[in-house]
Length: 138
Image (tube, rainbow, N blue to C red; front, side, top):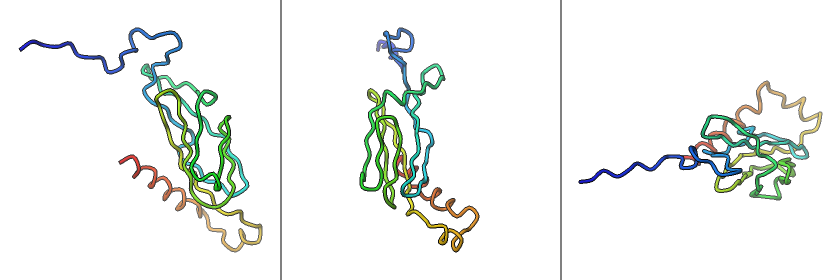
């Protein structure tokens, strides 16, 4: 029985090509987003590199979104909440992909906020959406 050489886990780590970032994975910030209809929010994408550094690549990713009637994302990473519901925003760079769960609630009027104001009232919604995102990974 002869021994075979072990293939490196990250083959480009020792001899990177020009422009090769040696990316392990990409991630989106924030990891979870809660908006009201009509609001916008800017999200960022970071490449986590084999040397441990994080490099922002927001301007380099290709964006996609499910349920475009609920919300939209533009090429700069700005999400616009259109109507109540949940959606997933996907960022893609080279062969790497990341997803963001966006929960959108209907826009509340000042009168309805006074009636339903509960400290931490959005925490349950955010926790539920986060749990749904984690369960997708399993």
